[in-house]
Image (cartoon, helix red, strand yellow):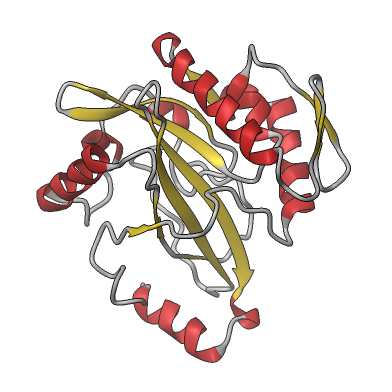
Length: 246
């Protein structure tokens, strides 16, 4: 609804904020992340061999960020999260470990030829896509089912990825309306998206784009918010309904 971000991809510089956020849903979201990673690591995690250096660099960057965070207590072997849960540090499985430390999902995008490919991810809270189908694909094929992702948008997004600098991360947000507040909602390509009837929940992703300085991989981080429409101000709720009339 902000005119600065209404034109896709709608990115802005991330000014004075971290790309890692802990909100009032932390304990509940982290419990669900713990469950998914323990029960279905094959579903929420993937890492191609050549992407391991980027995953290890991201692992180090996130741990460094958390050292100064209130609520986190760190030692050489484990991290105690703000909800009191202790997580053993396992650098051999960098993305799986990060998935248990913060609410964000992380996707690694690395340039091969003219496009960036998805080479690894910890994706506990997908909103209508499946990691196994997207792994190894370039941006254009990842977004193939998205009708608004036409050739012009693809060029804008690729220019954005090419221009990201390590010292200046970017961010954007999207919005979706659901009847089901479940966080983990994968969907295979070609499967119809359930059309919301009651339009009970607003789901929004805060997406950040971070260039890792050593490997030059782009980290696409996703922080998911799910809020009951009834808890939003009337202007905001109606604005979201106007954006999603179907």
